[in-house]
Amino acid sequence: MRDNEVVNVGPDPLTFDDVIRVARHGAPVRLTDDAVAAVAAARQRVDDLAEAPVPAYGISTGFGALATRHIDPALRAQLQRSLVRSHAAGNGPEVETEVVRALMLLRLHTLATGHTGIRPTTAKTLAALLSAGITPVVHEYGSLGCSGDLAPLAHVALTLMGEGVVRDKTGNVTPAAEALKQAGIEPVELAAKEGLALINGTDGMLGMLILAIDDLTRLARTADVSAAMSVEALLGTDRVFAPELQALRPHPGQAAAAANMVRILAGSGIMASHRDPEACTRVQDAYSLRCAPQVAGAARDTIAHAATVAARELASAVDNPAVLDDGRVESNGNFHGAPLAYVLDFLAIVAADLASMSERRTDRFLDVARNHGLPAFLADDPGVDSGHMIAQYTQAAIVSELKRLAVPASVDSIPSSAMQEDHVSMGWSAARKLRRSVDGLTRVLAVEVLTAARALDLRRPLTPAPATAAVVGALRETVPGPGPDRFLAPEIDAAVRLVAEGGVVSAAESVTGPLG
Image 1 (cartoon, rainbow, N blue to C red):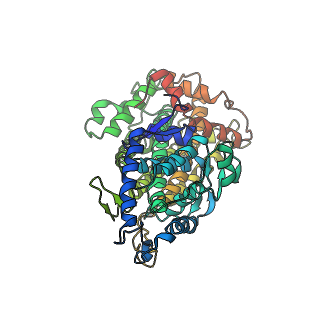
Image 2 (cartoon, one colour; image 1 turned 135 degrees about the vertical axis):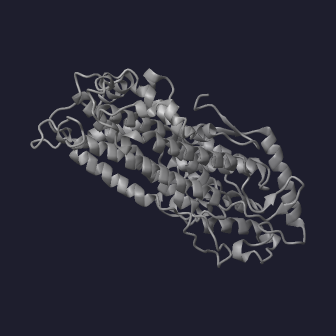
Image 3 (cartoon, rainbow, N blue to C red; image 1 turned 180 degrees about the vertical axis):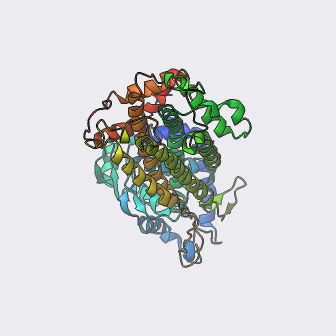
C-alpha cells in the first residue's frame, strides 16, 4: 500500500501501519460509512440527554471539580468553547508534526467508534484537517496523562473551532482560521459534549508509543548488525551464538538476535582466520560481545510486550463519559494512561541498555590492551592523530543521558483539579523522554557502526563477511575509510542518517535476506 493511499477510519481498530503512514508519510484519511452511522446514532443519545431534566456529566454539567454545576441550555455552546480555550494551555517547545498527526488520527478513530457522542460533521472536519495536511501547533508541556492528553488535544480542538495557530501543508506557521479558509474547511461550532469528546483521550501517548515501537524495532536489528561487526573486527567468536546454545534459554527475542548475528557473520574471512584453536588462545569474549543476543533479545521481548499494549489501546474507545451500545452514557476512568505510561518507561530502559552495551563495544576498539592488534584509538598515527577517541566521548555522553532518561516518569504522580484528579499517569512525559531516548540510541549505534567499519578496514587483507562488508560499503558512500584525522562530526552525522533511515539494516539484508 502506497503512503498516499487513503487510510479508512472506522469503528474497527487501526493498524500500526495505518498510524505510521498518516503520521510520518502524510497519508490522507476517510471516515467510513459505518463510522458515520455509529457516530450519528451515539449523537442522538447525547441530544436526548441534553434535553432531559436530569444532569448528565459533560453534557449538561461542568467538568472535573466543577461537575456539580448544572449548565443552562443557553450556555452549553459557550461551555464547550470555554472548555477548549481554557484547556489549550500548552507551553514550551513545539511538538513534532508526526506526533500531532498521530494524535489527531487516534482521536478520530475513537470518535469513529460511536462511543463519544460527537456529531458526524465534527468528526468529518477532523478528518479533513488530516487530509489537508493542517497540523495544529501543540506544545511539549501540558499533559499529565490522565483525563487523557488534555492540553495537546485541546490545541487540536481549538483548530477545529478556527482558532489558534497551525502549520499548513507546506510547514509554515499560520493562523488556524486562515489555513482552514484556504483549505475550504468550515470551522466547527461545538455542541453539547463535543469539547469533552475531543480532548479526553490517551492519543498523544499512544501515538508516540507506536512511533517508538517502529523506531526501536529497526534499531534492535541495527544493534544486531553493529554487534556482529564489532565481534568480527575484535576477533571474537560466533560459536556462542549457535542455536543449540540459545535453545537452552528459550526467550524468543534472544533466539532471533543470535540467529541474526550468525547470518550476518556467515562467510567472514576475519572469523575464519582465528577459528583454529592454535591461532586463538582466548577462552571467551567479554560480555559486551558474548552476551549481545541476550541483551538485544530482552529488548526485543520488551518491545513485543509494548506492542501488545499498544494494540489493545488501538482497539479502545477512550472517552469520558462514554456512550454504550445500549444507549447508556456512563462516567468511567478509561482515560488513565497507566498502561501506556508503564511500557513507555520500559522502552526507555531498553534504549539505555542497548546503547550502554554498544558503547562498551566501541570502547574496546580504542584500547590497545583489548583490541587485539589494532592501532591505539584506531588512529592513523597514534599520538599525532587521535582517531576515534572523542567519538567515543560523544557516545559516552549520550549513554549517560540515556541512563537519566530511563528513570521512570510513571511513578511520579502529581495531583490536579482541586484534588479531583488526584492520581495521574505522567504518560505524556514518559513518551516525550522516550523520543529523546530513541534519538540517543540511534546516535550511539551510529558511532559503533562508524568505529567497527574503520576497524574492519584496518584488518585488511583479511576480509569481512559479505553482510558486514555491505554495511561498510554503504557507509563508505558518504564517509571515507581510515586515514589521518579529519573533521569527524559530519562523518558521525552521516552514520546517524544511515542508521535512522534504515540503511545499515537494508545493507546487511541485501546479503542475508530479511532479519528477524
